[in-house]
Image 1 (cartoon, rainbow, N blue to C red):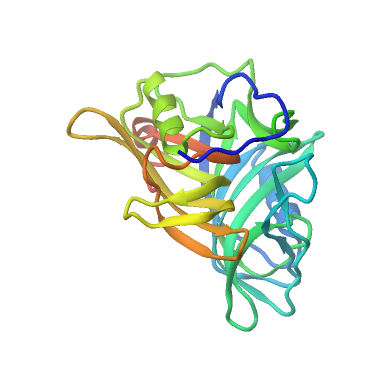
Image 2: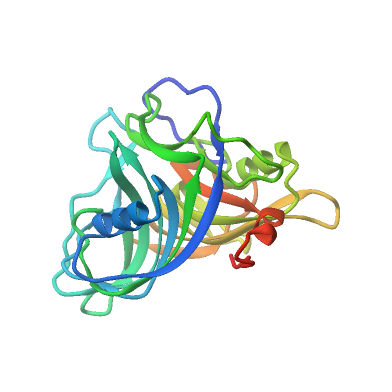
Length: 297
C-alpha cells in the first residue's frame, strides 16, 4: 500500500471517533452570501454547532478555490495550490462539506466538482468565505448533537484539522451514529470497517465525507498515480458480506495535483489517507428508528 512521510511525529491512534445523535434536514441554500455564512446560519437556526452536508446544483459567483499541490517547503509533505478565481458563474455539480468550529466560530471543509463559465469540469478545495451562492443549492444536512468537529493542530502533518470532539454530557445509546476522522497512511475503507466492527455495527450509511488520499486505486483496477489528491464521498455504505465480514463500499470523486478528475468505488485495503478524512457514520438501525421515518442515504 502507498505511504506518505509527514514531517512531524506520528500521532497515537490512527482514527478518532465521537458518538453523537443526528438530525437530517433538506434545504435550499439561498443566494446572496458566502457558503460559510449561509451554512453557519443553518446551524444557528437549528441550534447545532456541527454537521456534515452534501450539496447539489446551483451556482457560485464569485467563486474561489485551491487545488491539491506538492509542498514548496519541508514543513509539510503536501500543500495547497495558489488561489484560483474563475470569471463568471460556476455551476456546482456535487460537493461534500464538514461543518465545525475554529476558535469558537463556524468553519468548514468542502471539496467538490463544478463547471466553469466555459463548461470545463473542475474540482478542488472550496474557499469558504470566497464562494458566494448565486443560484440556490440543494443541501442534505446531517446536524450533530452530542459531538462536534473542532479544528485542532496536527503535529504530524503541520496542519490544523477538523476532528470530532465528544460532548461529555452526551449519553451513548446502542447503535449511536458517530463522527469520525482518519489520520495519514491508514487505509480509508479498513479504518471505517474497523470502527464499525468495534461498535458491533453490521450495516451503516456514510454521510458527508471530505479528505485526501495518497493517489487512489478503484475496485475496477484503475489507479490514480499523482499522489496528492482532494477527495469527497459521493455515497458510501458499510455492510456485512455473505461470508460474515464487514465491507465498506465507498464511491468518491477526486482531483489530483496535476488536475486530473477521477471517480469510482475505492478498492478495500489499497487507499491510504494522505492528510485526513472526515465523515459521519449512521447505523441503519438508528436510521430506521428516526422519528421522521426517512432512511435515505
